[in-house]
Length: 204
Ligand SMILES: Nc1ncnc2c1ncn2[C@@H]1O[C@H](COP(=O)(O)OP(=O)(O)OP(=O)(O)O)[C@@H](O)[C@H]1O
Ligand SMILES: [Mg+2]
Image 1 (tube, protein in one colour):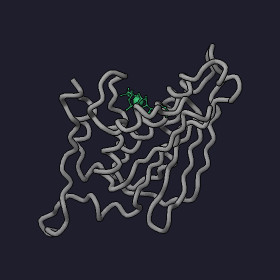
Image 2 (cartoon, rainbow, N blue to C red; image 1 turned 180 degrees about the vertical axis):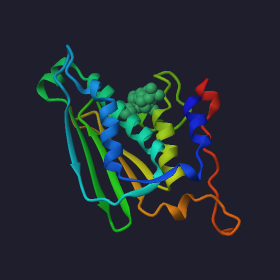
Image 3 (cartoon, rainbow, N blue to C red; image 1 turned 60 degrees about the horizontal axis):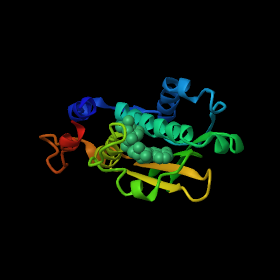
């Protein structure tokens, strides 16, 4: 519920022009303790392959929330690997940023964890899941990217080939203004963005 209220409260004043690499770095710093070695595995190797991307005017707090959801799932998936898998393949997280054409950017987060089983994959972006965790991390992340930023959130994953793992890719249009600026009295042709609505019955 906390997340839902947070998203619903967002308005134009929350949009800031930011360097997304700084958002990634600060999110990584917050969860740095989860990357360290433990009694089951060595430290997770973090590779950052940052391309040249422009600053973007976005709901920066929400975008950081998406980074956090994806990175924390990636660490969970690595932690869920068997001791043997962890011994054979050093646990690795890769964050790649790049331009996609002239007008969009891609941010990919790859892990060599368990992969997402077919039975789960079709449901990962819905709010209807029950059972594991609160299970809303990806549903909220998907809403933030698609409804708030006119972007896309996609996933490729592999459970059959060991240690292929999972990649989530965020695609964001560089020019956000055309998509999500609320209606102004002087700009009546622009669409307002309705508040995001999670399926609250699934959150209880
Ligand atoms: N990188 C990943 N590798 C493997 N499985 C994943 C990955 N990301 C998500 N999943 C699967 O998708 C499910 C849904 O993820 P989601 O973040 O929405 O919920 P959750 O992690 O279960 O709970 P929480 O609300 O605490 O995040 C996870 O439970 C997990 O089974
Ligand atoms: Mg999660």
